Image (cartoon, rainbow, N blue to C red; front, side, top):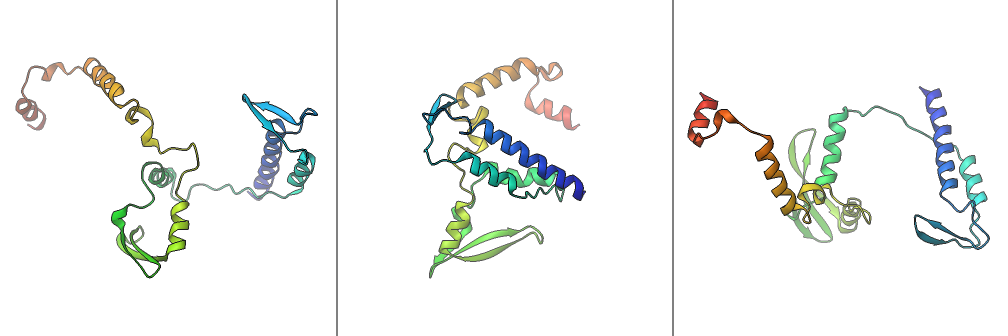
Amino acid sequence: MAVFMRVSAVLSRAKFGCGLTRNSAAELPTSHTRTVEQKQLNIPEHFQWNRIKNVLYKTSWNVNIEKPMAGIQAVVKYLGGYTNRVAISNSRITSVENRKVYFRYKDRKRLVSKTMQLNTMEFIRRFMLHVLPHNFYKIRYYGILSSANSKTKKEQIAALMETCVPIPEYEGLSAIEVYSLLTG
């Protein structure tokens, strides 16, 4: 495994460097400007691409290749918390006093609720780690539930479901009759 990781490190470094070279200022014309995806980039003259590239290639890379510890389901569950929820809700903050923030959290090993105390700066630092970068959005803001699409898409889905999910054996029956047929 160690040999494979060393080879992966060399390949990763080479691919990264190649990508940077392709998308960088390495082939700048003398005017030091280049159009990338219809945006004009003004590269300072003191930008020394070859120097940066040489440092990149001399640096030893460490590539860590491991299987997810608890399997793919745990990874999906972990990432799901970041893609669909806020870092901490107001209801979990129990008190703020003497430059300390007290909040509840769930101990996942023991499956109990505990209280943690952090100084305000550490609390803010940890909170800011969960703020998404510019132009990144929570998943709930996209797709059929986005505010721009919600009414039109929901109407389309309802129309499709009526045409695509026919249940002739229950058609014309009341809810009580369908329930009794399903449950016996």
